[in-house]
Image 1: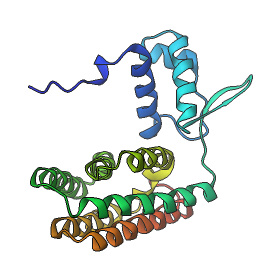
Image 2 (image 1 turned 45 degrees about the vertical axis):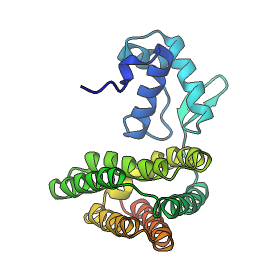
Image 3 (image 1 turned 180 degrees about the horizontal axis):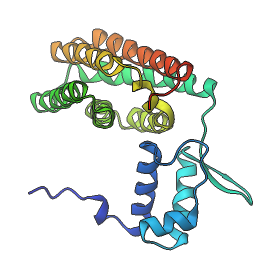
Image 4 (image 1 turned 180 degrees about the vertical axis):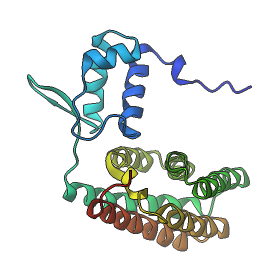
Length: 223
């Protein structure tokens, strides 16, 4: 049995913050939506204080905007900032993949392949939510395996901001399959130990993700 801590093992404040962050990331709380302290406190079974503190913490992460005398709102990211974020994440993810290629272990490779295969199953099942979660994990694990804590930290900050709208990138039919085909090319480069190919594949993947995002905002979201 795993001894890994779960969200229920966290202190109250951290647990509330994690729940609000999850609700923002999965779209339960949409960009621009006000964080109703009373309703959220009731939903989470806590008082309003922890919800208010969690909102302030999420503001520091760039997920929430707190407006004096109006309350806290899920942050809406301007288009130019979103595109800048994609550009920066492409560089960071490319760097992480290049760092990992020469040092990847068999155990790390198995974990990444498992995530890739899970995404393949999600594509076949049309399960966008599962694909989205595994996709996030795939990127996070590559950055963690790359052994550069500072780059990983910056990447995580930017990735959180991109999560505010990346979900729509997979609305279009075929977009999940396209994304996972790009993951396969990244894995092939990592398993070959080819740092430069891994970098190029990762940067291409991010540019393609940017294109999918732009396509999603030009096309009405699917029901």
